[in-house]
Image (cartoon, rainbow, N blue to C red; front, top):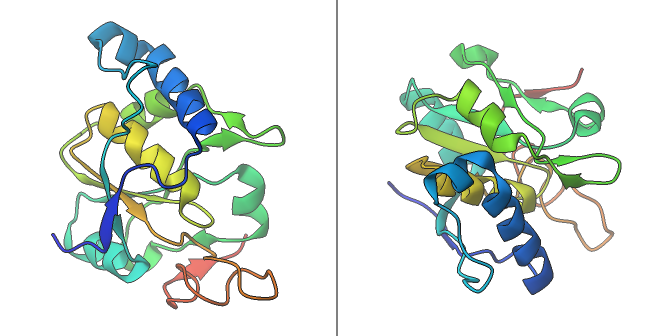
Length: 181
C-alpha cells in the first residue's frame, strides 16, 4: 500500500512518550497479554502516515475499512466532522484525550476493540493536525491492529504563517466531504 512515510513518534517529546508508554502499559489488554513496552524501551511502534486523499481512497475501495476521529467532543461539535454518507459508512468517534484537561482517555483501546472488532481491517485515525491520531494509531498497533494508519495533517492541517489552520493542508483543504453539526 502506498503511503507518504513512516512515523516513529515524531510528535512525542521524551516526557510525553513515557506518559504514552505508561498508558499503554497500564491498559488491561496490555497487562493481560504482556504486550507493552517497558519504561526503558523508548522505541514506539512504527505506523504509516497517509494523505487525506489516500485515506478517502481506502475508505471508498475497502468496504471494511474504518475511519476513527480521535478529536474531542468540542472539536466534533464546533469544527466539523468528515462526512462518509456518500459512501454509506459510519464515522467512529473516540476521544484520544479528554477535554478540558486533555488527559489520555483510559478507555480508548477498550472502546476501539468494542467498535472495530476485526483487527485485520484498515483503521485510519484522524485528529486536528495529525499528532493525536499518530499516538492513537501507535496504541492500536500495540493492541494488535495490523493496519493502523495516521492521516497526516489531520482534519484542519498545519498552521499557516498567520497561525490559522484549514489553509495549508488536511482533510478540509483536500476538499474531502465534511459537515458541521
